Length: 262
Ligand SMILES: NC(=O)c1ccc[n+]([C@@H]2O[C@H](COP(=O)([O-])OP(=O)(O)OC[C@H]3O[C@@H](n4cnc5c(N)ncnc54)[C@H](OP(=O)(O)O)[C@@H]3O)[C@@H](O)[C@H]2O)c1
Image 1 (spheres, protein in one colour):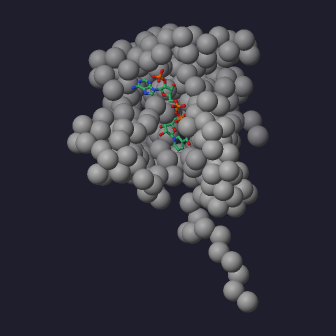
Image 2 (cartoon, rainbow, N blue to C red):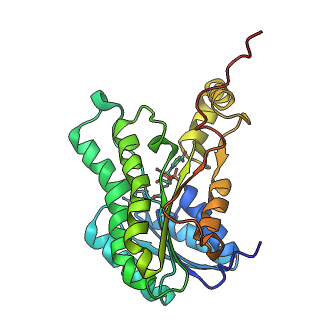
């Protein structure tokens, strides 16, 4: 299927590694130009170099997305570097603290700021650019945790809010020709990420987790998340708006596999 992403201009927050970098790679493979932002300059430079080596057009912008001025400047710089913006992927995210009793109010504020406020502000600043595109689309990278809470309470709550932001913004921005969707990855194996470390350090526990959680017995890959992201960002998904699409390998099914009673 021709996705119609050639020549489109995309900003991906948190694009220097993991799911964000996989989305950048997939967009570049479709002929889009990308701007990536993250805090770590060395990793950002490596990501941009690897995208350029594959023949893509990529620019890196150092920014902390939890800093309003930094994020505003990053969106403006991305639009200036690429000559406008058609696509925005609010991907940067993460958790501070654990369960309610293992987290502080500051952890909750930080987690909400990183996952929800950064996404909302990035869209706010990008709207004038996106409104100039004939196929503008925003994608918010939420999580399975929005729907099936895990042990990190601030993260699950913030991701639920981030998922809800998609239909809220789709409603507000539809008149400007901007679609807004969310994507909810399940536990995603990214090189050097948390699940990858667990696989290396606690292989038996990792294998048990994969077998119990996923019908196919394996975690989702960042590339699988990126493929769905590309489709949702493309004009071929013009009929999808305000949705939250699960890419969780069936992890969100109603319950773990049960034995069949005889
Ligand atoms: N991996 C999973 O299993 C999984 C599952 C469901 C949902 N998700 C969601 O998917 C998204 C990406 O996750 P991931 O696992 O790919 O994360 P990751 O590997 O930790 O990468 C996060 C990216 O965001 C950047 N970042 C983090 N905080 C930032 C900040 N304050 N300002 C600017 N950039 C920042 C990081 O670069 P710097 O650190 O250099 O800033 C990096 O580029 C997140 O929203 C996460 O909640 C992940």
